[in-house]
Image (cartoon, rainbow, N blue to C red; front, side, top):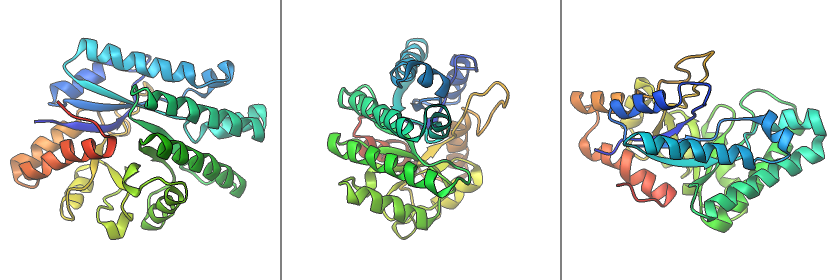
Length: 276
């Protein structure tokens, strides 16, 4: 059975290959490696390219070591903007973030990455001008994604139906389809009435997934594992998605058809990939 983890991070100074192995030993077959924020390196190099290259190298090393397929998602992490603004000023910070989106888009166009992300807004309260600038950068990312036909992966404040509607409207304004907007760290807002057609990537606590399954199977599963040595297991451990899926199947809470939809059909439709 295909088991697809939609969003986790790995670090060389974290568990890295050990964490990836934990995923595969638990039954995981495919994962999305999302670039870990490295704002200091970006500032030093005045470019996101070294960060993206490192993420791609890590993916290659994982696949060379373990029986797992790794897809890569890269993009300028929204909170980086605050660091850059303090260091080089607002205008240059926006330029650097947009150049990061351009570089991510090129990697997607070259079929080395499957989406631009995570992009969006800081997940904590910020000043109105930061929201405005973040929205400008976000919509630029959506436009680039629409032009090359790939999704965006959003990192934002707490997800609500109102914010889902806002993001879908942002996408519509620049030609990006709702289904090409992946809302990372989503609660179980599964129905079209709740999410306005975007793709929720549900943080895979037992409670969230059980609730999601009562509404349907149009969602992805993620742990947002951070691989931070100072915070082991945060947000959820790398074995969570395969272990929880197996448990829910065994208990009859999730059907095999639902599992196939969540772990195969939804990723294939969202990212335009074929899972083997």
